[in-house]
Amino acid sequence: MELLQLKYFCDAAILENLSQTAKRYGVPASAVSQSIRRLEKELGTPLFVRHANSISLNLQGREFYKKVSEALKLISDASLALSDDGLGTIKICINTNQRIVMDTLQKYNQLYPGVDVSTNFLADPFDEKFDLIISGENDGLNKYTKEKIISERLALAVSRENPIASAEGININELSKQPFVSMHEQSSMYGMTHSICNDLGFKPHIAIQSDDTYYVRKCVELGVGVAIVPMFSWKGLFGENVALKVLEGYTRDTYVYTNTNKYVSLSAFRFKELLKEECRSSLAFFIDNR
Image (cartoon, rainbow, N blue to C red; front, top):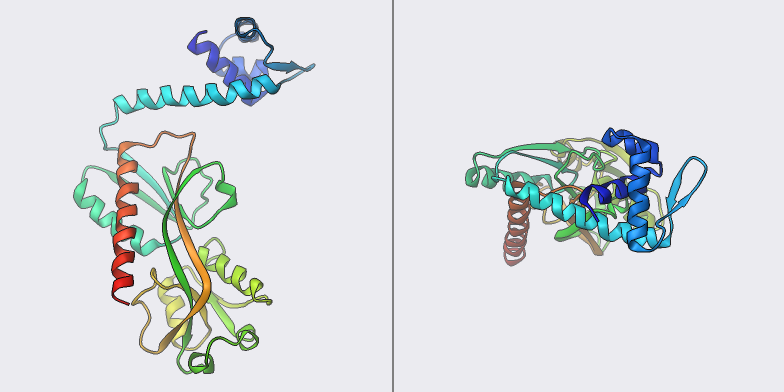
């Protein structure tokens, strides 16, 4: 069993075509076919179902592919690790918790001045170029490795001139009549606003949308609308004219995602660990000083 033979097998499993696999390696299709045939003979079982113009893994092939693909990634990662000097560039997609991520970046730059960090806000998290993705729960990233970095309570931010601010609790009927202020549709703020309002039985009227958190805060302070915000991430950002009313039972979880098919460089790993530590210590300080 040879390394190249296993690479042929894995690529053929993904492409489901021997000719396309051969083109990827610049060899005749017969070379790939014969290599896979030898592999099947060595293992004593067929791995593919052969069709007229394509192939597909059978049950044994799927089990074998799962283990072999993991092994090939470990080998590739081991090779990359030997030349990983902890420098280079980290590409980060930031779709939530921008403030604490950027605060962490400032500390990271002081610790590792030789590392370049590229940040993209509210970008497509499925872009393969990203080393780290900071996002809320995202079903589309279920094949990525995820680690929870923070869980925070949610609150309704409302101008104190609004009767809702001084009322006991939150009247759902009155809340449903309110205009809402939110961020871009790709943001966690937009998603959790719709999710919570739908859970409460109504569709929110988003009167203002902006990518600028300062503008969002000002709209709330001026009474243009109300907003659902995470209490920790937005702590101290509103003026005294804004009341924060806790939405009992609702929290926002933030995760750092890494692509399981991509090598996590030493520089990216260090940033991830520093971010986790910053989130832990900052949240603990916030809770102790509320």
